[in-house]
Amino acid sequence: MQFLDKSINDNVQNLMVDVFESISASEKNEILVQELMETQSIFEQVFNITKQTGFYEAEDHLDLVKAIDIETKNDTVEDELMEAWTMMVANINAATTQEEFNARFALFTPVILKKMNAFKISNPE
Image 1 (spheres, rainbow, N blue to C red):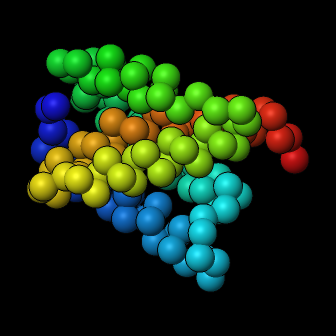
Image 2: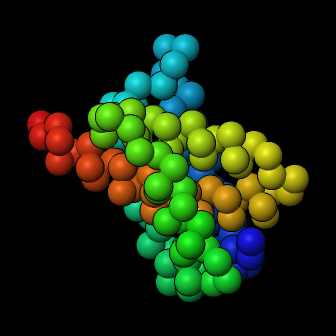
């Protein structure tokens, strides 16, 4: 896996921190789908700045994103979103450097966004 371009690495890291701070602000022991959905605009920012660098087309990244998406097939879109989130957290926690942590977060971003969009479609407000 290739790391993020140096020009965006710090921005992705800051946005990732925003996601986790937003979710950790909850007083509940487990993350609710609605709390995760409130971070969608942050994930969109990560995706937009990362996509511009060609990160998703580099090496085998596109194949990895597709594989991650296949791994998260569940009965409901809510379960798919929560499984993708859980898989992302487990994967980024296995990173050995901050750069790898950031790159893994960015790699999961399109999958998380796809699941968020599916959730919005199936649960219109």
